[in-house]
Image (cartoon, rainbow, N blue to C red; front, side, top):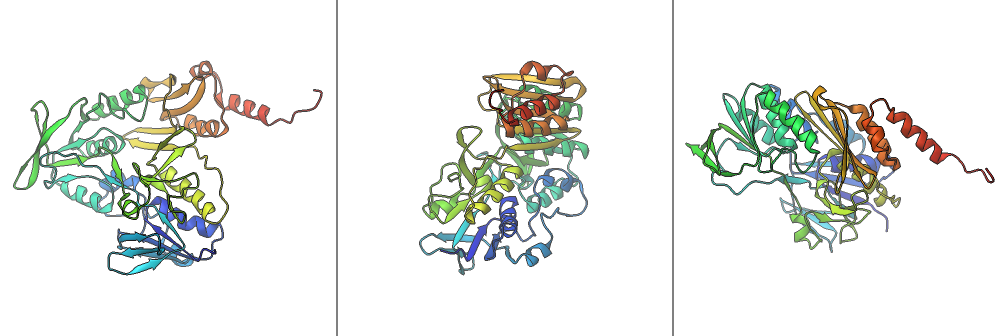
Amino acid sequence: MSIERIVIVGTGHAGTQLAASLRQDGYAGAIALIGDETDLPYHKPPLSKAFLKGGEAELQLLRPEEFYVKNRVELMLGRRVAAIGPAEHRVALDDGSTIAYDRLVLATGARPRLPALPGIDLGGVVALRNRADGLMLRAATVGAEDVVVIGGGFIGMELAATFAALGRKVTVIEAAPRILGRAVAPQISEHLAASAVAAGVRLLTATTLRGLEGDQGRVSHVVTANGERIAAQVVVVGIGVLPNQELAEAAGIACANGIVVDRSFRTSHPDIFAIGDVASYEHWMAARVLRLESVQNATDQARAVAKSLLGMPADYRAVPWFWSDQGDAKLQMVGLSFDADEHVVRGESGAGSFSVFHYRAGRLLAIDSINRAADHMLGRKMLAAGFSPPPAAVRDLSVDLRALAEAALAERAAPVIAGA
């Protein structure tokens, strides 16, 4: 059966890259790209940094408008898919109209998770995910002195650094014993925590909340479990996300903390695929089922599923990498450090430039780097090639890791000569 129309639901990084990759790989059929936002598809990471600092509502577009015209991508903005009919191969939109598809790709992403706290619906409480949230947050902070960030993960710490740089009094409340506890090594957490405190941020770890208090419908205080009342004219929630899987669930597609997909990103329905933050799959590196919430994961999966849709499936083995800018610290991560049993530091944390190499049974799993871009880039190459530098070499700054890796990889590639 020829594929005459591919419908993509979601105009984020994954959906937009898929439309581009389909054309790059030679697909000549119809492409419909549907999203509920009215803006042209744009980069999301700057929302927690440059966008909040700017006086204008400028967005960094993923691609200019003429890209969609030139590549015959039917861009349907401000439209919401209300239902999927797998048997009919149709999606129903919120205005009652329907669109037929031969293949459907769900790139519906995720949404911020909100804590079940009294006062969470007060004015001035924002969870940042899109431009509308960013504009709301920017407006709420005009004239505000006190900002409370609930959650010490990536988005929370990025926002804390941004608001501190804008001169606000910032408090971060994190339930875990340390910030970024599920994502990075303790040494990285300690360094970023110290940097945040030096910038004027108050950090409260191992702290839970009782609720939020308000005045005339707007938040005025955050109350901790031990009764401390912290002034807040603005509260930003950053405690993780929930996958937007409801459409798939309602259509009878298998879901479990996301839409379940196989190695080709096909769902339990053979003509429906899922990619990006919403896709739950067994990761080749982690050897477990997970979802990855990152721009890299979204774009790499989009490129891979484009080939699958066009009958060119490839073994998906992209090395995951992430980044987070927090003040003067550029945190870069590559790989997945699940089940690591050894953590080796390269560089000096006191100098503000160091990396932590994670190993399991002598095999390199991941690298977390602070202001050491060379370690990060080399790590992407080493993990892709399956090369693990000896921990002793990592500790020794006199060892040229790049040369060591290149020599080892060249030796692997050398032909075996019979009788040698």
